[in-house]
Image (cartoon, rainbow, N blue to C red; front, side, top):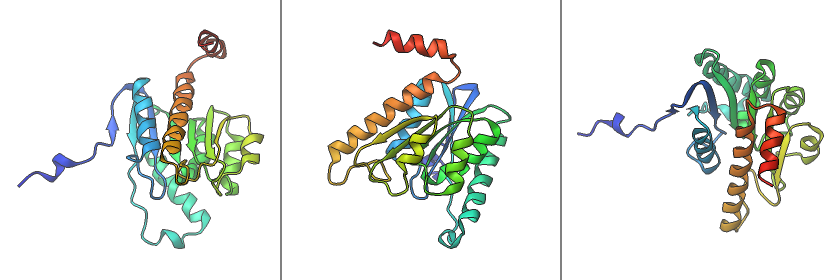
Length: 209
């Protein structure tokens, strides 16, 4: 009988020991879904170690208060960060993952938030006080995305027209693929900028023109 462990999904992908990115899923959006799958690919291309979280949402999660949900997410993410013993330098989170925005702010960890839940005050306030580099990506058709809040922040922001909470376009598969392409391109630019000085970033931008 085949060993079931042989078919286990890997959750860690090794790169630089001092540059670990933790990938945080949404409620039903696992690290295998397109946005997080390609985020991992970009990170690996840039030499990062990637640790994916594959959490099990509690069966009664729908009954949790907002504060309970925030506390639950923060516990998962805190444990993952602490396990890296200071090497975690980036969080990449989808939707529910943005409930850990306060941790990123408190620990001065860079973050890329895909469809952050800006309609939750805790998330919006956390991102507003974040000093580390941050990227926010949302869709104009996503009811959990607030373009005014995003635009008011000093962070790097990408809004994809007509994209929903999965950053997909309704009844438009090819348009959805193009949306993923835009996300990957912006992630590539953002991740590539981490650890570089403003002068280096400016020179890199000039060389591409």
